[in-house]
Structure formats: C-alpha cells, structure tokens
Amino acid sequence: MNKQEFIAELKKKLFCLPYQDIEKSVEYYSEIIDDSVEDGMSEEDAVASLGDIDEIVSQILMETPITTLVKEKVKQGRTLQAWEIILLVLGSPIWLSLGIAIFSVAFSLYITVWAVVFSLFVVVLALFVTALALLIASVGFLFTKAFLQSALFLGAAFVIAGVTILLFLGSWYTAKGVAILTKMFFKSIKTSFTKKGEN
Image (cartoon, rainbow, N blue to C red):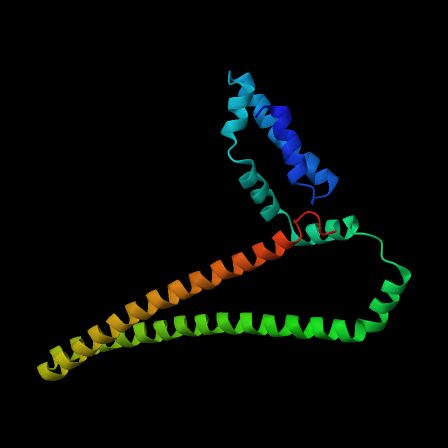
C-alpha cells in the first residue's frame, strides 16, 4: 500500500469523525510517511512500518471524546419528519424518564461494585494492622517471659498475615477486572457510534 492508498483508506475508515479531525490525522500520518521516505525508506515500507490501519483507526477513535462522536453521528443523521418530531416531544415525559431511570440504575450498580472493591481494600488494611499489632504483642510477651502467649499471638499474626495477602490479591484482581469491564463497556458504546450505514 502506498501513501495515497493509505490516506484514502484512513479517510474512509474515519468517516464518523468531524472533517477537521480527519484532516488532522491525515496530516499527522502523512508527515510520518514523508519523514520515513526522506530517511531512505520506500513509500510502501514507510506505510507498512505504521502498522495495521484498523489498529491505527481504533486508536484514533478511542482517543476521540464520545461527545464528538455523538455530535458527528447526529449531524450525519437524516432529517426528522414533522410527525416524528411531534411524537418525540409528546413521548418525552416517558422516554426521558425511562432514560434517566436506566442511567441511574446503571450508575448505582457501577458505584456499588466500586464500593465493594473499596471495602475489600479497607478490610485488607484492617487485617494488616491487626497482624502487625499481634506481632508487636508477641514480642512484648517475650519480654515478660510469657512464652505461651507470645507463641499464640505470633501464630495468630502469621495466620492473619496469610489471609491478608490472599484477600489483597483477590481485591487487586477484582479491581483490575472491574476496570477492564468498564473500559470494554465504554469501547462498545464508542463502537456503536462508529458503525457505517446506520445513519
């Protein structure tokens, strides 16, 4: 693929962005190709060094704010008929209320999930402090020559430290999983605004 073909394909795949954003991306990648050609590469090799065009487009779209994608999608959409506008206005108390309710429930679930994750980390911190306190207490019992109590407190400290480590790992992977799911969710929303032929 030469530079001209790459630019044409890039413009085609970025159809869902505003004109100035498309031109900005085209200008950026044109400069990279031109710089590589100046350094002695062929046009085809310079284009190939950029990587897969679908990955480039995906990266550009992920960096684009969702508000920009929505505005452009609305702009590209067909003009509404008078009867459609009337139905939208008359039905707004229903669909607007439903929309707000759905958003509120989804947002509440999202906050609840993160609250649970936060609570897990608080429990981990509490267990860590408990294990530390038991360790200090076991050392204190050694000085008073209460060896049985010292051994008991030391054993409890190790057990709680083990539970703390396991719970920390569980909390960490839970938080990571929720973050990945959040990213995937927002990516799917963006993707729905970048599909062709649904205007």
